Image 1 (cartoon, rainbow, N blue to C red):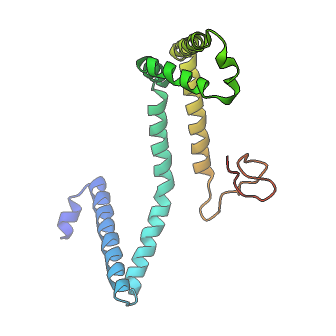
Image 2 (image 1 turned 30 degrees about the horizontal axis):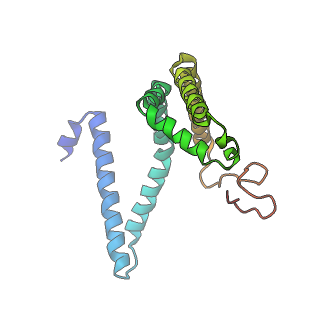
Length: 192
């Protein structure tokens, strides 16, 4: 047995230790579940293994989270999302113009104006112009740069918050002054 372990290089040995630890953690979780289900007390060794498992998970979850966020950040920053939105708008052009016309027609503030001659033509032309300008804006590389900056800045803020989070410490509460959705009078969420 010892000779077999001596033939392993350090990476293989570490992988073996991690594998054995994983198997022991799964077995201890199953033993705990079975014993608790039968109303018996969990043995000391199994409780200890469960504590060690929780400690290891707490130890490695933040670095793994940051690494995953780094990978997601690289993928998100390489995309061209405004072009995708622009393509979707072009693809659904007729439906969007009809949707805008329908919403304007049913808008309560446009009831008086809707009786004027040429109203439908004006709404159609304004919808076409707005959609065309929006598609051109989304096709512009500057808009792609803006969206990329927004994504990058948000991801950096998330990564910083994950790195600075202290285990066991609750995040700061949201106060009414920092959240427009919370009523300052009652502290409850506003219904919109």
